[in-house]
Length: 377
Image (cartoon, rainbow, N blue to C red; front, side, top):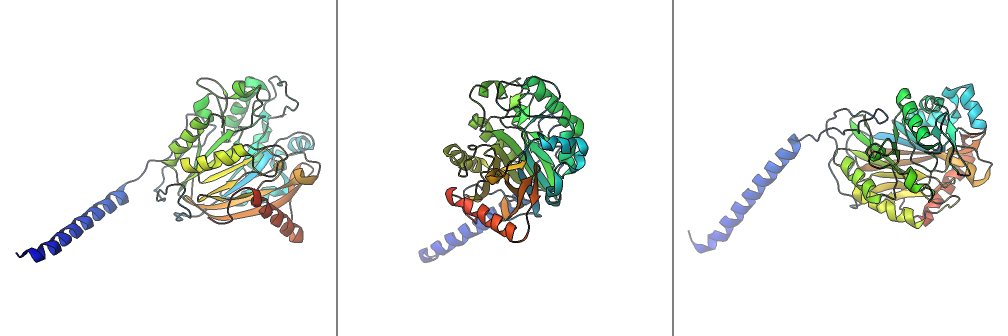
Protein backbone atom coordinates (compact mmCIF):
# COMPACT_ATOMS: atom_id res chain seq x y z
CA UNK A 1 0.00 0.00 0.00
CA UNK A 2 1.29 3.41 -0.90
CA UNK A 3 2.23 5.85 1.92
CA UNK A 4 -0.46 8.38 0.94
CA UNK A 5 -3.26 5.97 2.05
CA UNK A 6 -1.76 5.11 5.45
CA UNK A 7 -3.19 8.21 7.31
CA UNK A 8 -6.70 7.35 6.08
CA UNK A 9 -6.30 3.80 7.31
CA UNK A 10 -5.11 4.96 10.71
CA UNK A 11 -8.04 7.40 11.01
CA UNK A 12 -10.54 4.63 10.20
CA UNK A 13 -8.92 2.33 12.77
CA UNK A 14 -9.00 5.00 15.46
CA UNK A 15 -12.65 5.82 14.71
CA UNK A 16 -13.64 2.16 14.94
CA UNK A 17 -11.78 1.76 18.24
CA UNK A 18 -13.55 4.82 19.65
CA UNK A 19 -16.91 3.43 18.54
CA UNK A 20 -16.24 0.13 20.32
CA UNK A 21 -15.18 1.93 23.51
CA UNK A 22 -18.35 4.02 23.56
CA UNK A 23 -20.51 0.99 22.93
CA UNK A 24 -18.91 -0.92 25.78
CA UNK A 25 -19.27 2.08 28.11
CA UNK A 26 -22.95 2.47 27.27
CA UNK A 27 -23.58 -1.21 27.86
CA UNK A 28 -21.90 -1.14 31.24
CA UNK A 29 -23.69 1.98 32.47
CA UNK A 30 -27.05 0.76 31.23
CA UNK A 31 -26.79 -2.50 33.10
CA UNK A 32 -25.56 -1.20 36.47
CA UNK A 33 -27.95 -0.56 39.36
CA UNK A 34 -26.76 1.45 42.34
CA UNK A 35 -27.79 -0.05 45.67
CA UNK A 36 -30.67 1.50 47.61
CA UNK A 37 -29.96 4.10 50.29
CA UNK A 38 -29.26 2.56 53.67
CA UNK A 39 -30.32 4.22 56.91
CA UNK A 40 -28.40 4.32 60.18
CA UNK A 41 -29.68 1.64 62.61
CA UNK A 42 -32.57 3.50 64.22
CA UNK A 43 -36.33 3.51 63.80
CA UNK A 44 -36.32 7.32 64.03
CA UNK A 45 -35.04 7.46 60.47
CA UNK A 46 -36.91 6.15 57.46
CA UNK A 47 -36.53 2.75 55.91
CA UNK A 48 -35.28 2.70 52.36
CA UNK A 49 -36.70 0.48 49.68
CA UNK A 50 -34.89 -0.71 46.58
CA UNK A 51 -35.71 1.39 43.54
CA UNK A 52 -34.73 1.25 39.90
CA UNK A 53 -32.10 3.97 39.39
CA UNK A 54 -33.59 7.03 37.74
CA UNK A 55 -30.87 9.64 37.93
CA UNK A 56 -27.86 10.37 35.80
CA UNK A 57 -25.21 11.51 38.30
CA UNK A 58 -24.38 15.13 37.67
CA UNK A 59 -21.60 17.01 39.45
CA UNK A 60 -22.48 20.11 41.45
CA UNK A 61 -21.60 23.48 40.02
CA UNK A 62 -22.47 22.71 36.39
CA UNK A 63 -25.40 25.08 36.06
CA UNK A 64 -28.84 23.79 35.02
CA UNK A 65 -29.29 20.09 35.62
CA UNK A 66 -31.02 17.55 33.43
CA UNK A 67 -34.36 16.44 34.98
CA UNK A 68 -34.57 12.69 35.45
CA UNK A 69 -37.34 10.43 36.68
CA UNK A 70 -40.84 11.20 37.86
CA UNK A 71 -41.46 14.65 39.42
CA UNK A 72 -41.66 14.66 43.22
CA UNK A 73 -42.90 17.58 45.32
CA UNK A 74 -41.17 18.53 48.57
CA UNK A 75 -42.76 21.00 51.03
CA UNK A 76 -40.90 22.87 53.77
CA UNK A 77 -42.11 24.89 56.74
CA UNK A 78 -40.03 26.73 59.33
CA UNK A 79 -39.92 26.70 63.13
CA UNK A 80 -42.51 24.71 65.07
CA UNK A 81 -43.10 24.49 68.81
CA UNK A 82 -46.20 23.94 70.94
CA UNK A 83 -45.91 26.67 73.53
CA UNK A 84 -48.54 29.19 74.64
CA UNK A 85 -51.80 29.22 72.72
CA UNK A 86 -50.58 26.38 70.52
CA UNK A 87 -50.46 24.03 73.51
CA UNK A 88 -54.20 24.39 73.98
CA UNK A 89 -54.73 23.49 70.31
CA UNK A 90 -52.53 20.42 70.79
CA UNK A 91 -54.41 19.32 73.89
CA UNK A 92 -57.79 19.92 72.26
CA UNK A 93 -57.16 17.94 69.07
CA UNK A 94 -53.64 16.98 67.91
CA UNK A 95 -54.90 16.06 64.45
CA UNK A 96 -55.91 19.66 63.70
CA UNK A 97 -53.33 21.49 65.82
CA UNK A 98 -51.49 22.98 62.81
CA UNK A 99 -54.63 24.52 61.37
CA UNK A 100 -55.51 25.21 57.71
CA UNK A 101 -51.90 25.20 56.47
CA UNK A 102 -52.14 21.41 56.70
CA UNK A 103 -53.90 21.28 53.34
CA UNK A 104 -50.80 22.74 51.67
CA UNK A 105 -48.48 20.26 53.40
CA UNK A 106 -50.64 17.28 52.48
CA UNK A 107 -50.47 18.17 48.79
CA UNK A 108 -46.73 17.45 48.74
CA UNK A 109 -45.19 14.02 48.33
CA UNK A 110 -42.88 14.71 51.28
CA UNK A 111 -43.24 17.55 53.81
CA UNK A 112 -40.72 18.66 56.43
CA UNK A 113 -40.46 21.21 59.26
CA UNK A 114 -38.03 22.23 62.00
CA UNK A 115 -39.34 20.91 65.33
CA UNK A 116 -37.87 23.45 67.73
CA UNK A 117 -38.64 21.81 71.05
CA UNK A 118 -37.76 18.85 73.21
CA UNK A 119 -40.52 16.25 73.23
CA UNK A 120 -40.58 15.19 76.85
CA UNK A 121 -42.54 15.44 80.07
CA UNK A 122 -39.40 14.97 82.15
CA UNK A 123 -35.82 16.13 82.23
CA UNK A 124 -34.57 19.38 83.73
CA UNK A 125 -34.50 22.75 81.91
CA UNK A 126 -31.15 24.21 80.99
CA UNK A 127 -29.99 27.62 82.18
CA UNK A 128 -31.22 29.32 79.00
CA UNK A 129 -33.73 32.15 78.82
CA UNK A 130 -36.18 30.08 76.77
CA UNK A 131 -36.73 26.34 77.19
CA UNK A 132 -39.33 24.63 75.00
CA UNK A 133 -40.92 21.25 75.46
CA UNK A 134 -43.99 19.44 74.20
CA UNK A 135 -45.75 16.16 75.01
CA UNK A 136 -45.46 13.12 72.72
CA UNK A 137 -48.75 14.10 71.07
CA UNK A 138 -46.67 16.66 69.14
CA UNK A 139 -45.71 13.92 66.72
CA UNK A 140 -49.37 12.99 66.19
CA UNK A 141 -50.03 16.64 65.40
CA UNK A 142 -47.30 16.70 62.76
CA UNK A 143 -48.52 13.45 61.24
CA UNK A 144 -52.10 14.71 61.20
CA UNK A 145 -50.99 17.82 59.31
CA UNK A 146 -49.20 15.84 56.62
CA UNK A 147 -45.63 16.37 57.87
CA UNK A 148 -43.45 13.38 57.01
CA UNK A 149 -40.12 14.19 58.68
CA UNK A 150 -38.74 16.83 61.07
CA UNK A 151 -35.30 18.04 61.99
CA UNK A 152 -34.61 18.50 65.70
CA UNK A 153 -31.11 19.91 65.19
CA UNK A 154 -31.60 23.36 66.67
CA UNK A 155 -30.90 25.41 69.78
CA UNK A 156 -33.90 23.93 71.60
CA UNK A 157 -33.47 20.24 70.77
CA UNK A 158 -31.80 19.52 74.09
CA UNK A 159 -33.57 22.10 76.27
CA UNK A 160 -34.34 19.42 78.85
CA UNK A 161 -30.97 17.76 78.88
CA UNK A 162 -29.89 14.33 77.75
CA UNK A 163 -32.89 12.80 79.50
CA UNK A 164 -35.19 14.99 77.42
CA UNK A 165 -33.28 14.11 74.26
CA UNK A 166 -33.71 10.40 74.95
CA UNK A 167 -37.41 10.98 75.60
CA UNK A 168 -37.69 12.81 72.26
CA UNK A 169 -36.12 9.89 70.40
CA UNK A 170 -38.32 7.37 72.24
CA UNK A 171 -41.46 9.37 71.48
CA UNK A 172 -40.53 9.63 67.79
CA UNK A 173 -39.90 5.90 67.61
CA UNK A 174 -43.21 5.12 69.33
CA UNK A 175 -45.05 7.36 66.87
CA UNK A 176 -43.11 5.91 63.89
CA UNK A 177 -42.23 9.48 63.01
CA UNK A 178 -38.83 10.13 61.37
CA UNK A 179 -36.58 12.79 62.90
CA UNK A 180 -33.11 13.85 61.77
CA UNK A 181 -30.26 15.89 63.20
CA UNK A 182 -30.50 14.28 66.64
CA UNK A 183 -29.31 10.95 67.96
CA UNK A 184 -27.91 8.70 70.63
CA UNK A 185 -24.53 9.30 69.03
CA UNK A 186 -23.00 11.19 66.11
CA UNK A 187 -23.66 8.38 63.64
CA UNK A 188 -27.39 8.58 64.25
CA UNK A 189 -27.47 12.39 64.50
CA UNK A 190 -25.72 12.87 61.14
CA UNK A 191 -27.63 9.99 59.56
CA UNK A 192 -30.12 10.58 56.76
CA UNK A 193 -33.81 9.83 56.60
CA UNK A 194 -34.38 7.86 53.42
CA UNK A 195 -37.64 7.79 51.50
CA UNK A 196 -38.42 6.34 48.10
CA UNK A 197 -41.16 8.38 46.45
CA UNK A 198 -42.43 7.57 42.95
CA UNK A 199 -39.24 5.63 42.33
CA UNK A 200 -37.04 8.57 43.39
CA UNK A 201 -34.71 8.07 46.34
CA UNK A 202 -34.81 11.10 48.62
CA UNK A 203 -32.25 11.56 51.42
CA UNK A 204 -32.78 14.18 54.15
CA UNK A 205 -30.10 15.36 56.60
CA UNK A 206 -30.53 17.84 59.47
CA UNK A 207 -27.87 19.91 61.29
CA UNK A 208 -27.60 23.09 63.35
CA UNK A 209 -25.26 26.02 62.91
CA UNK A 210 -26.77 27.71 65.97
CA UNK A 211 -25.79 26.60 69.47
CA UNK A 212 -25.17 28.73 72.54
CA UNK A 213 -21.42 28.90 73.04
CA UNK A 214 -21.76 27.64 76.61
CA UNK A 215 -23.74 24.61 75.42
CA UNK A 216 -22.15 23.78 72.05
CA UNK A 217 -19.77 21.13 73.40
CA UNK A 218 -22.39 19.57 75.68
CA UNK A 219 -25.09 19.45 73.01
CA UNK A 220 -23.03 18.24 70.03
CA UNK A 221 -23.31 14.53 69.32
CA UNK A 222 -20.13 12.52 69.39
CA UNK A 223 -18.90 8.92 69.49
CA UNK A 224 -21.19 7.22 72.01
CA UNK A 225 -22.46 10.66 73.08
CA UNK A 226 -26.10 11.74 72.61
CA UNK A 227 -26.71 15.13 71.04
CA UNK A 228 -27.31 17.11 67.89
CA UNK A 229 -25.65 17.14 64.49
CA UNK A 230 -23.55 20.29 64.68
CA UNK A 231 -22.75 22.13 61.45
CA UNK A 232 -19.67 23.46 63.24
CA UNK A 233 -18.36 19.93 62.65
CA UNK A 234 -18.34 20.89 59.00
CA UNK A 235 -16.17 18.07 57.72
CA UNK A 236 -18.51 15.54 59.34
CA UNK A 237 -21.56 17.20 57.79
CA UNK A 238 -20.00 17.38 54.32
CA UNK A 239 -18.94 13.74 54.60
CA UNK A 240 -22.54 12.79 55.44
CA UNK A 241 -23.75 14.61 52.32
CA UNK A 242 -21.14 12.95 50.12
CA UNK A 243 -22.08 9.53 51.48
CA UNK A 244 -25.79 9.78 50.65
CA UNK A 245 -25.04 11.50 47.33
CA UNK A 246 -23.64 8.23 46.00
CA UNK A 247 -26.90 6.33 46.43
CA UNK A 248 -29.61 9.01 46.25
CA UNK A 249 -31.49 10.74 43.49
CA UNK A 250 -32.19 13.89 45.53
CA UNK A 251 -30.28 15.09 48.62
CA UNK A 252 -31.87 17.60 51.02
CA UNK A 253 -30.09 19.37 53.89
CA UNK A 254 -32.22 21.21 56.47
CA UNK A 255 -30.20 23.58 58.63
CA UNK A 256 -30.80 25.72 61.70
CA UNK A 257 -28.77 28.81 60.86
CA UNK A 258 -28.67 32.56 60.52
CA UNK A 259 -29.17 35.47 62.90
CA UNK A 260 -32.40 36.17 64.75
CA UNK A 261 -34.26 39.06 63.15
CA UNK A 262 -31.90 39.31 60.17
CA UNK A 263 -33.55 39.22 56.75
CA UNK A 264 -30.27 38.66 54.88
CA UNK A 265 -27.99 35.62 55.24
CA UNK A 266 -24.91 36.09 57.40
CA UNK A 267 -21.39 35.16 56.33
CA UNK A 268 -21.53 31.70 57.96
CA UNK A 269 -24.56 30.81 55.88
CA UNK A 270 -23.09 32.22 52.67
CA UNK A 271 -19.91 30.20 53.28
CA UNK A 272 -21.58 26.88 54.12
CA UNK A 273 -24.22 26.77 51.36
CA UNK A 274 -21.82 26.40 48.39
CA UNK A 275 -19.79 23.79 50.28
CA UNK A 276 -22.91 21.72 50.83
CA UNK A 277 -23.82 22.05 47.15
CA UNK A 278 -20.29 21.06 46.10
CA UNK A 279 -20.56 18.01 48.38
CA UNK A 280 -23.73 16.93 46.57
CA UNK A 281 -26.75 18.66 48.14
CA UNK A 282 -29.56 19.46 45.70
CA UNK A 283 -31.76 21.36 48.17
CA UNK A 284 -30.50 23.38 51.14
CA UNK A 285 -33.18 24.95 53.34
CA UNK A 286 -33.20 26.34 56.85
CA UNK A 287 -34.68 28.44 59.60
CA UNK A 288 -33.87 30.12 62.95
CA UNK A 289 -34.06 33.87 62.26
CA UNK A 290 -37.82 33.94 63.06
CA UNK A 291 -38.26 36.05 59.92
CA UNK A 292 -38.25 35.13 56.24
CA UNK A 293 -35.06 35.23 54.15
CA UNK A 294 -34.52 34.92 50.42
CA UNK A 295 -34.32 31.81 48.28
CA UNK A 296 -33.09 30.85 44.83
CA UNK A 297 -30.57 28.83 42.84
CA UNK A 298 -26.89 28.33 43.59
CA UNK A 299 -24.74 26.29 41.19
CA UNK A 300 -27.78 24.34 40.02
CA UNK A 301 -29.08 23.58 43.53
CA UNK A 302 -31.91 25.37 45.36
CA UNK A 303 -31.17 27.26 48.59
CA UNK A 304 -33.62 28.87 51.02
CA UNK A 305 -31.83 30.84 53.71
CA UNK A 306 -34.80 31.29 56.00
CA UNK A 307 -38.31 29.82 56.24
CA UNK A 308 -39.30 31.95 59.24
CA UNK A 309 -41.73 30.96 61.98
CA UNK A 310 -44.34 28.35 61.18
CA UNK A 311 -46.31 27.03 64.15
CA UNK A 312 -44.97 29.48 66.68
CA UNK A 313 -46.19 32.26 68.89
CA UNK A 314 -45.79 35.54 67.02
CA UNK A 315 -47.10 38.99 67.85
CA UNK A 316 -47.40 40.46 64.38
CA UNK A 317 -44.82 42.17 62.23
CA UNK A 318 -42.19 40.28 60.27
CA UNK A 319 -42.24 37.42 62.77
CA UNK A 320 -45.81 36.61 61.78
CA UNK A 321 -45.00 36.37 58.06
CA UNK A 322 -44.89 32.67 57.21
CA UNK A 323 -45.56 30.19 54.45
CA UNK A 324 -44.71 26.91 52.77
CA UNK A 325 -41.96 26.44 50.19
CA UNK A 326 -42.89 23.71 47.70
CA UNK A 327 -40.21 22.43 45.33
CA UNK A 328 -40.64 20.05 42.42
CA UNK A 329 -37.59 17.85 41.95
CA UNK A 330 -36.64 15.36 39.27
CA UNK A 331 -33.48 13.69 40.43
CA UNK A 332 -30.86 16.41 40.90
CA UNK A 333 -32.90 19.05 39.09
CA UNK A 334 -35.25 21.44 40.89
CA UNK A 335 -37.80 22.11 38.17
CA UNK A 336 -40.29 24.22 40.10
CA UNK A 337 -40.47 26.44 43.19
CA UNK A 338 -43.68 27.80 44.72
CA UNK A 339 -44.16 29.97 47.80
CA UNK A 340 -47.54 29.75 49.56
CA UNK A 341 -47.64 32.82 51.81
CA UNK A 342 -49.34 32.76 55.20
CA UNK A 343 -49.64 34.89 58.30
CA UNK A 344 -49.50 33.51 61.83
CA UNK A 345 -52.63 34.05 63.89
CA UNK A 346 -53.28 32.23 67.13
CA UNK A 347 -49.93 30.50 66.75
CA UNK A 348 -50.65 28.84 63.38
CA UNK A 349 -50.02 30.03 59.80
CA UNK A 350 -53.17 31.00 57.92
CA UNK A 351 -52.72 30.91 54.11
CA UNK A 352 -53.30 34.24 52.38
CA UNK A 353 -55.40 34.78 49.29
CA UNK A 354 -56.08 37.26 46.53
CA UNK A 355 -54.21 40.54 46.36
CA UNK A 356 -52.81 40.01 49.84
CA UNK A 357 -51.15 36.77 48.74
CA UNK A 358 -49.73 38.44 45.62
CA UNK A 359 -48.17 41.21 47.69
CA UNK A 360 -46.70 38.68 50.11
CA UNK A 361 -45.23 36.65 47.28
CA UNK A 362 -43.65 39.77 45.76
CA UNK A 363 -42.13 40.63 49.14
CA UNK A 364 -40.77 37.11 49.47
CA UNK A 365 -39.18 37.26 46.01
CA UNK A 366 -37.60 40.63 46.85
CA UNK A 367 -35.74 39.06 49.77
CA UNK A 368 -33.49 37.33 47.21
CA UNK A 369 -31.72 40.62 46.43
CA UNK A 370 -29.18 40.26 49.28
CA UNK A 371 -28.55 36.52 48.98
CA UNK A 372 -26.41 36.14 45.86
CA UNK A 373 -28.91 33.53 44.64
CA UNK A 374 -30.52 33.43 41.19
CA UNK A 375 -34.18 33.25 40.21
CA UNK A 376 -33.40 30.50 37.69
CA UNK A 377 -30.84 27.65 37.57
